[in-house]
Length: 165
Image 1 (spheres, rainbow, N blue to C red):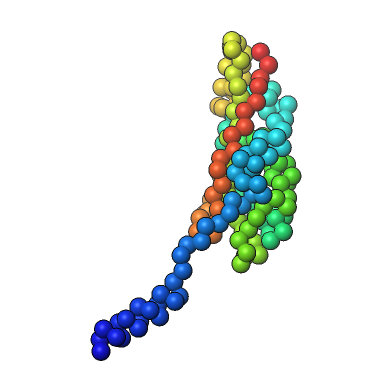
Image 2 (cartoon, rainbow, N blue to C red; image 1 turned 90 degrees about the vertical axis):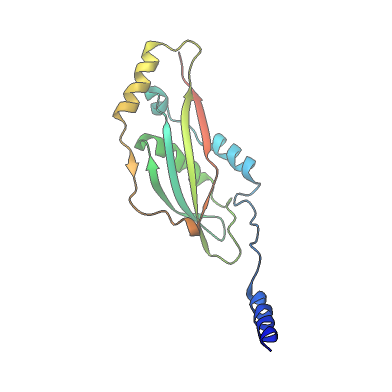
C-alpha cells in the first residue's frame, strides 16, 4: 500500500514538473547580428576621441512585448562621457528585442567596453591624454541591486576606435 501511495505521489508531482525551456536569443537575428548592430550603430563622439576615453559601461533596459525599449538604467559607467553614444545606440535598437511569450516586459543587462586602437608609434601626447582621462574620470555607480533572476545578461559589446597620431 505504501508503494502505491508513493508511486501515485511521484506520478502526480511529475505532471507539474517541466524541463527548462531553451529561449531564443533575445535580439532578432541572434548574437552576431546584435554585436554587428551595436558596432555599426554606436558612433564614438569626437569628444571621446579627443580625450582618448576608454572604459566600461553596464546598462539595464526594459523591453516590452513589441521589442520597444521602455526604460534605460546605467548600473555602472567609468565616465558619463562614455554613456551618451551607448544610450543613442540602445534607442536605435527599438523593436529588435524578443522577450519570452508569457511576459509583458523583460529586463536585459548589457555591458559595453570602449577602447581605442593605439597608433603604431604612440606619441607622448597620446599616452598623456589617455592617462589624464583615466585619472580624472568620474564613475557612475548604481546602488540598486541587479535582479539577476528576472534579467537576461547579454554578451559584452566591444567597441574600438582609431585615434589620430
